[in-house]
Image (cartoon, rainbow, N blue to C red; front, side, top):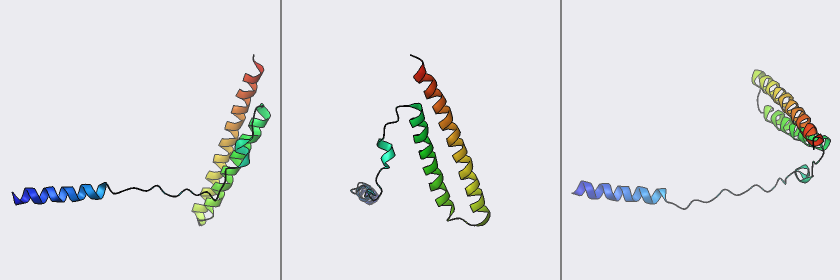
Length: 106
């Protein structure tokens, strides 16, 4: 009987700890959204330019992350960043071609 009471009180204590009030992490508002996010890209050329800017920004962030590494790891990081940028630009070109083709057809 004592074991059951002890087990129940232990279970109740654990439940109380698990149900502790959770608070959301504070939002970092020091960085505003880039203005390009709110500029329309209605033409195929504008769409391509916007995708290029996004790819360049992602490449810059990837290179910045590579600065924390050294030696072969840094070299591989930069190589991976270049490959990702090349893939992003190729994807932007495919989207441009698709968007340009669909804009022509009525």
